[in-house]
Length: 414
Image 1 (tube, rainbow, N blue to C red):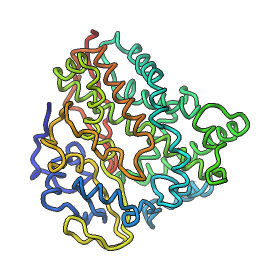
Image 2: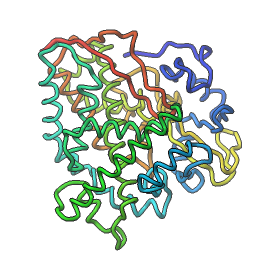
Image 3: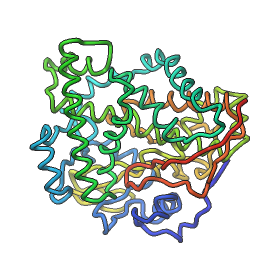
Image 4: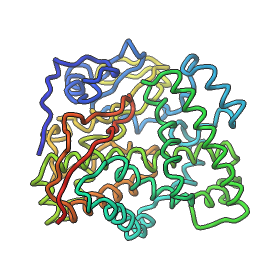
């Protein structure tokens, strides 16, 4: 077991502060205790930090709307020009940024994608993906964790399920990173423009794939998207691009982050590695606990449609609210000793890492299995896992995501 030790008094509410980015949890604790609904002057949005308040908001989409759209001044004009003139314009709200009844139509289509039954059928295939990756590095005794394991595991899986070549993995990752970087709110205008160009590049790539699947459907997700009617109609190209973009991102970014965090946890706790090696069934609950402990999505935004009270604080209509899942999953009123990683935690799976309600992550079941299988196969085949340079561990700056930068481990083969 490990725990956080940084003092809450040593941090300020500044998401651009590297200290906050590396260890936000003391700040979250302070917010939960002193200001469960807190307005951040510098950013113009509210933070909701307690578990019960976040869950109540998630389950009340009528008041906490996901449909926010672009705000004036939020992006450079050049970004909009790129989308309008080179791409397919401002893509419609479909899933994450949408509300019922429109959201319900798209959700009907994608809910068929990663059902529990389909994920169970993929078990042997996912073991094969993970095992092949381990085969490539195990003799070296050293691993670049993100590039050579955490990224390719979910990227290969989602590429195979979409029906696109694994050989384009680097390009998919670049596109996926470009899709999420602007959401993190901590990038330059130059990077926003670069991300827009990459997004348009992705659009043109997948439009060609859509055209091919309409003529030559296969047993893959894209074929389902382009050929299946929802409420009597097929999705048009902008709708398909919107849905596909979210499937690609949801299919790899958060799982990559969780696998990276899992490896760090293993490297910091040799006894845990041996426990999992001897009792591999515990890897399932390990996956739940790592999602709680180091939530890949630290928080998502909502817009209030009416005046509302949260934690005794009045939040006006039209306010941008960040539901801070990373804080909710460390709430003392929900979890005993929340700053400790406990592989035997009974209620670990109650975490909000995948949201809840109508916006519960489509790929949640798939992500859980990918994480559990990755950890199980690693601990079955490796021992003496250790960080090469623990002092250099760092996270990519983002208000939304918690993803590790590249790091290396050394290990011995069992």
